[in-house]
Image 1 (cartoon, rainbow, N blue to C red):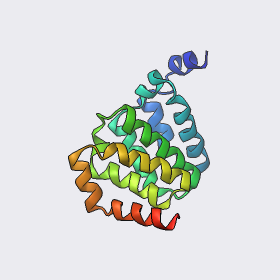
Image 2: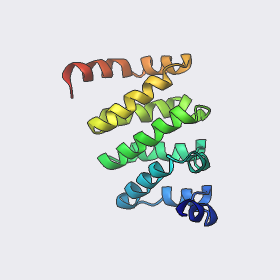
Image 3: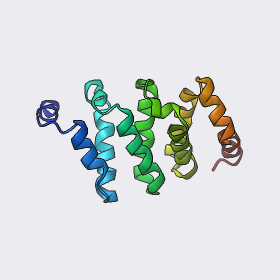
Image 4: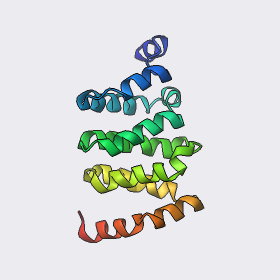
Length: 149
């Protein structure tokens, strides 16, 4: 029933998503990212916001937020995009890799774990492997494993 309402009212259409993603209030964003993650359990709903434009907006929030709850929700979304929608070009570029790395550096341990899983899935592409090496992600992950923090 909720799914029918979401689709009928077009709450997950790109224009509506863009409105929510431009809201400057961190509390609202945190709840909206949680909502997006709940929607990702349904492939039909998730496919509605699987676009380079939406992922680019998520990436911008990575660089502007230090809130652990927001970073965790974005990490989970990016992981879902990496695993389910591998065709998204923004995830295969430096911006996508840098966003995942930024969350790994400043996110909570749970967000770090999700990002490490995303990096693992991204690293099967030769271009992304070079970006990972060039950005020092491997060195960071080694330090993280050695220090446990």
